[in-house]
Image (cartoon, rainbow, N blue to C red; front, top):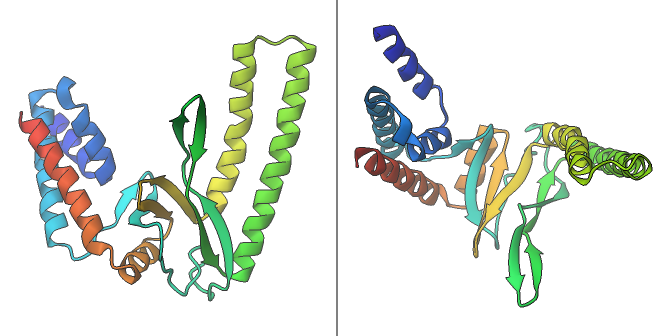
Amino acid sequence: MEASIEAVRQNFQSKADTELLELAATSVGMTSEARLLLLQELQGRLAKAKQARETVQLVHGWYTVVAPIAGIKFPHSCPRCARSEANSSIRFKSLEQRKFRLVYWKSDSVVSAIPHCSECAAQLKRTRTICSVAGVFLASLWLAIAIWFRVPRLVSYIGFFAISLPIMYLYDRTSAVKLGDYGEEVVEYRFRSHEYAMAFATINNVQAENAETLQSQLEHAISAIRL
């Protein structure tokens, strides 16, 4: 019993903040012992967050900073290699949001030009071109196969999804930056480098806002578990 409790505790300790928050949201089915251990871990994270001067959340392997959409600044170093001066810009698009407009749906997103060094910018542009060409070719080939062999619609949709996965993985692995969700005035910037994320938060004076966001989420999760 003691070993299983220790294993659960270590499992919670290995989780990122966002993963713990997701567990807290679905903690109804947990045992009382697991809920207590989760509560203790959340309380420990909250105490650390209050003591820390700067807080950058780790979300699924990306260091995430919520920053204003307009008037944003970037560190002088390249976010991909961290060695060279950033003198070329690469455009990144946030996740799309679909909004209903009278009789049709409209997709909106935020686009940001993020400085990279010339070498990394060239590599990323080359990767985007390869991904685009490969995606169009494979999708066209699968469409032709689906039509020729009269593949069921559901199977054809699954095929298109399967084709897109390696393309998305290739681009995701070569990029050091991406944009996440956005609101009316803010957008999520996600970075591979913790140092660059911290520098980005500092230069845009959003350390306090990101720390407060995490603290409020942890406090809400703790209150939910206690109920």
